[in-house]
Amino acid sequence: MTQRVAVIDYGMGNLHSVASALEHVGALEVVVTHDHAAITKADRVVFPGVGGIRDCMDAIRRLECDQLLEQAITVERKPVLAICVGMQSLMTASEENGGVACLNQLPGEVRFFGSPHQEADGTRLKVPHMGWNQVVQKQAHPLWTGIESGSHFYFVHSYHVVPDDPGLVVGTFDYGLAGCAALARDNVFATQFHPEKSHKAGLTLLKNFLSWDGTC
Image (cartoon, rainbow, N blue to C red; front, side, top):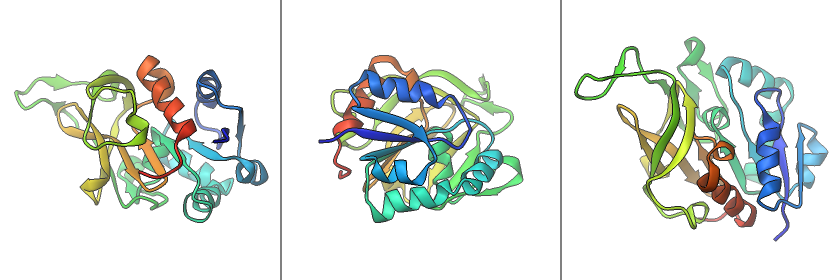
């Protein structure tokens, strides 16, 4: 299976760390771009992101990356991996910045952890949720191949995804609530954690993405 990967660049985040990780695990060619022709040529698409959702959505729409994603997901049916704010951007709307409409590729909301955020016993938890946390696999998926349930991945986020359909959740984390660490539908796999920063488990997930045919 060919492995030309387009990392969508809308100016938010260190996208080259994602590109370097993909090259490390065997991608034939990785291009960081928002050029329509280059993304159409790619065999699979990665949609990362960090930062505030309003700025991200403004940039996504200004550069017509929303159209690129619509084409890749629903028309060309390419394997798509969304990461962190990329995952949040696929939802219907986010509470961040007073409420922001997102891409509605995956129906659901992005919600703030809360302030104060705490465990059931009253222990205070810092927001953002930053650092290593276990991901419990809730459903089998090709991208989990070779990764044990309970493996640690690296998170940095103050908001978490709540899909309308709980059946889309394929991985959870525990941080004062059972949050969505990963969700999947058809040719889309999305993670709240950063696989490119998650050492062996994250690199294994990226390698699995390179051979994934976009089906569950």
